[in-house]
Image (tube, rainbow, N blue to C red; front, side, top):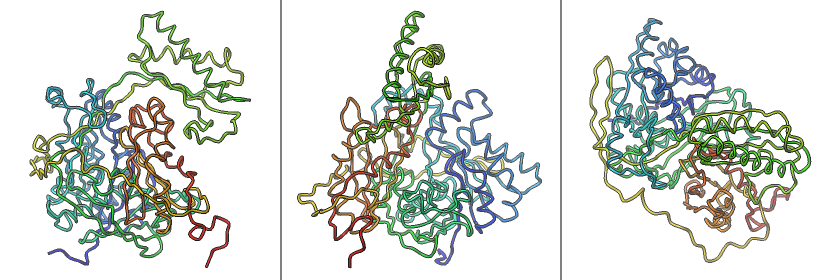
Amino acid sequence: MQDAGKVVRIGGATASFSDTALSVTQLLSGGALDYLIFDYLAEGSMGIFGRMQAADPAAGYGTDFLTVHVGPHLSEIASRGVKVVANAGGVNPAGLAVALEALIAEKDLQLKVAYVEGDDLRPRQADLLSAGCRDMFTGAEFPDHVLSSNAYLGAFPIAAALAHGADIVITGRVVDSAVVLGPLIHEFGWCSDDWDLLAAGTLAGHVLECGAQVTGGTFTDWRDVPDWANMGYPIGECRADGSFVVTKPTGTGGLVSIGTVAEQILYEVSDPADYIVADVRCDFSNVVLNEAGPNRVLVSGAKGRPATNTYKACATFDAGWRTTAYQPIIGEDAAAKAVRQAEALFARSRLLLQARNLANFSQTDVVLIGGEASFGAHANPAGSREVIAKLVVDHPTQEGAAIFAREQWAGISGMAVGTSINLSTSVMPVTGIFLFLIDKHKIVPTMTINGVTRQLPQHPGLPVNGQGHAPERRTMAVAPAGEVTASLVDLAWVRSGDKGHLFNVAVIARKPEYLPYLQASLTPEAVGEWYRHFGRDGLAPRVDCYDVPGLHALNFVVHDALQGGINASTRLDPAAKGMGQMLLRFPIRIADRIWPGPSAPPKA
C-alpha cells in the first residue's frame, strides 16, 4: 500500500552534457535529496557521441559524468545515500558503467552500478532500410552513413535497476523525463497501467530534467530573477498521488514561480493534451499550478491514457561538410555590404569548385548577426552600422568546404569597406537527423547489474493512427472588444524550443482574464504570418494552435521552420531558444478596463 505521506526529493542537476559544474555541489549541500538526476542527451548530442565512438569504439558516452558532475562527488553521494540516475551513457552505456565502476573501486566505495541497453538500433540498419522506414515529419528515406540510431526507451528499465539494488543507473537513449519517472515507479510501486500517475511522473520529469530552466533560467521576466551567478537548480518533492512541489535549495539564486514552472511545462511540447512518451500518453492541458510558499509551486492535475505500441526513434547521420565563417563588417549600410560580399564570395568559390571538377555547394546561406534578420519583416528599421556576417556553405566533401574556408578571407581586402579580421572559421562535418517510429515488440530492453544481464518485460501499448488526434483549429466568430493595443509581453510569458524541423512557442497569460484577447489576436494564420521569413519559398509556415486551459495558455507549433534540425540548420538560432522572443511585440487588442496600459494607474 502506498504511503500517502511519503515524499521523494529529486534534484535535477543538468539540462545537457555541458551544463554547469556547480549544480551538484549545490544540490548535495542544500537539497536533502533521495535522487540526483542528469539529462545529457538530445538529438544533437547523440550525433556527437556517435562520432566519438566512430573514432574510438571505447568512447561514445559523456565523460563529464566522470570528471565533472559525479566522479568528484562519489564519496559524498555514497555517504548521503543519494541515488543517481543519468542518461549519460550516450551510445555506449556499458562503456561508461565500466569506467565508473573502476573509479568507484579506486575510491574504495561500495556503490552498485547498473546500466540499461536495448535502445541502440545500429545493428538493425539493414532491416530499417529494407522495411522502407521514412522520416515521420519529412518523409525522407532512411539515411546512409548512420552515426547513431536509437529508440527512446521508457522508465520501467530504470525502475527495474533500482529494484535490483542499483545506487547509480546509467542509460543510453531514454525519454528525457524517464530519469525521474523511473525512480517514482520504484519508490511508489506504480504499475504500467497507472496512466494518471505515469503521466504525473512524466510531468515531474519534464519539469526537472531541464535543470535551471524551471528555476528562472531563460524566463521571460529575466529582470525579476536574482543572482544568476548562484542560480538554484530544481528540486522536486514528489508524492504517491502524482502531485509534486518544485523548489530549489535555500540560499541560492534563481526563481520558482507560477510563470517559471508554466513556461517549462510547455517547453518543447506540441499538443499538451496528447504528449506521447514511451510509457503513457499524457494530457497536461488541465494541469494546475498553485503557490505553496516562497520559491515553491505545487503542480497537479496531469492525466494519462494507454501508451502507444511504438517507440519514437532518432537516427543521426553524416550529411557532408560545412564551412562557417564569421565576418565583422562595420560602417554605413553594413548589412547591405555584408549581403553583397557574401554573394560575391559564394560565386567566386563556385568558380574554384568548377576549376577542380568538384560538385557545386549543396547549400549556401548568410545570416546577419546584429542586423535583426531573425525578426524578418518586424526587424527594427534603423540600419545597424556594425554586423557580423555568418557565412555558411555545405559541400559533399571536405575539400569543397575547405575551398570556401580559404577564399572567404579575400573579403577583408578586396570587397566591402569596413570588413575586419575574421572572428572564426571552421570546417566541420554536418550531422543530419532522421525521426521515425519503431514497433515496441522489435525492441528488447535489458538491464545489467553485478555482471548479470536481464531481459525486461515489455509494455506494448495500443496502436494509434498517426501521432495522436488531429489538432483542433480555433475559430472565433466575434473577437472581444479592444480599445487599446498591448504588446504580447505585457500580457503573457513566452517560451520556445526546437523539436526536429519544427519549433513550439508557448504563450501563457499573466492573468486569466487576458486569455480571450490573446486567443482573438493570436490566430494560427497570424502567427504563421509573423514567422513568414522562416517558411519555404516565401510562404508562411503552417501553424497549429492548442489550448491549455489549466495554465491559461496557448501553445503554437510552427512546422518545417528549422530546416535541417538542430544539427544541420544554418539559422542563427537552431535550438529555437529565441523564437518566442521574436513574438514579444506582437500587437494584442484588449479592453482598457482589463489592461489599462503599462504606465496607467490601476482601475477600481
